[in-house]
Image (cartoon, rainbow, N blue to C red; front, side, top):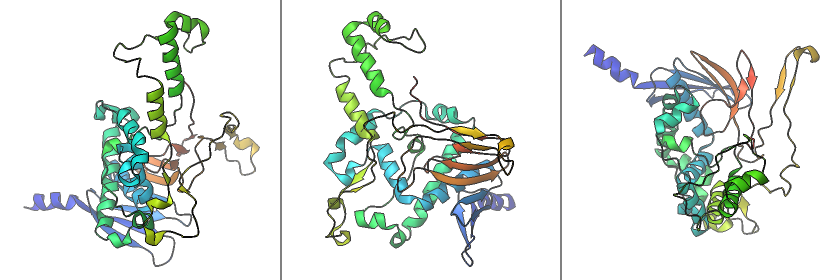
Length: 338
């Protein structure tokens, strides 16, 4: 009986939320944690997460990020699952069709473990943390963020495939791929190789026999572009009691497109500590992501055995994609390679 009680206790542990604002500490007991976790929220709103094991670290990151960005999480989930049309209607059908067309259908464990040797454990724990907060907030729906109320929707649970969705991937050469395929269909492999420069210089350009060339290219590219575009909200999407009668503009989570893809520039550099006043080395990284509200970046500090890293990443993805630990710093950016 004693061993059984210990096992039951291990299913419930506390997340201790500590804010730098006086008299704003909290402790929440959550099913799914193995040991207590401490989250210190600093004066800039960044969560410093201290866990005693890897599972709890990423469970807590998912919980904290969902707590901070719940509406952003719900829109990401709908983009990833092809269910945006459920709330925004027929105008989003091509997005949802595109999402389902491009959805990953392979071995999920193998796919998750490509990201990290413990990828399945990390992504699963993160998803469990997201769902723990969703369960918590659904118990008090009156406390849902205002966006849910004005659209008359509620957040839904996550699965691991939502985390690795490609709808906001840092990629951008599918139109090039389709144009090459179109050229091959019309001119043949050797002629296309002669007219183009490829890296590597001798790629395999043979068309898969399963591809119906009559239906390819324009239809696929249209669906791809539909599922990759940001979600835009219109006044008619909002419940009447929340509408501003003096404002008829579209409420958009949308960036203006720049006609010149190369005009935005790119800035990535490192300055040696020998050249700085405080002796520290500095790295600047340009990931080519839109400046938006809500932000497409989320800052966090993750500490557990084997982990001590701070920086930013996509809000809905575990870990840190741009940041540093005690050994070095790193970044990433989009690059049009195959």
